[in-house]
Image (cartoon, rainbow, N blue to C red):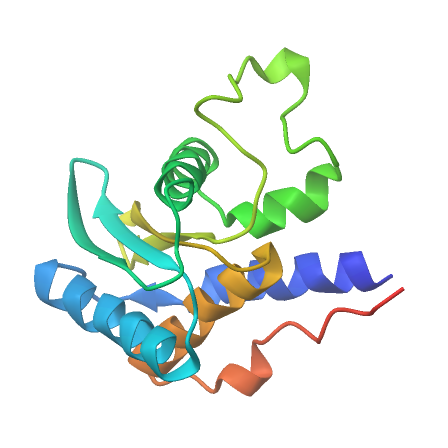
Amino acid sequence: MAVADDIARIKRQEELLVFAAFDEAVAFKVGSAIRDRAIAENLPVIVDIRLWDRPLFYAAMPGSNASNPDWARRKINVVRRYLRSTYRLVLEQQRPDRTFKVGEGLDIADYVLAGGGFPVTVKGAGVIGVIAVSGLPEREDHGVVVDALCDHLGIDKRGLALAPEEKS
């Protein structure tokens, strides 16, 4: 039941974490907030914020590595195709190999089932871009983005946060 609860919570995040407007200045504020948290908490992540036609913000933190930008790029492609959170797709698809079903026709070189990509949605316009974080376990990548969006939009993140992952 925990997976179903997480999916419902992520759908709620996607419904509520919507911007009135989104431009370079907003991308810089949100990206800088994620970067500031990464510095404060020593998170080895990269942050990539972009509209569909161009990048708006990028930062690589100490401890991130050469594979993180590629993971982010593949997460970005997934958000662009499905217009939803990559972690939601991870939970919905339940594919331990991180690939999409063969019938989807998505090359693993360009698409990955991994959390950390979140749609940038603007009221009245829909999904116009993506915020991707890579470098932590996928649930944490997702949470970093959601926390930053809640803070920026003035939404109580406690009401939208996923419960801590149960250890088996």
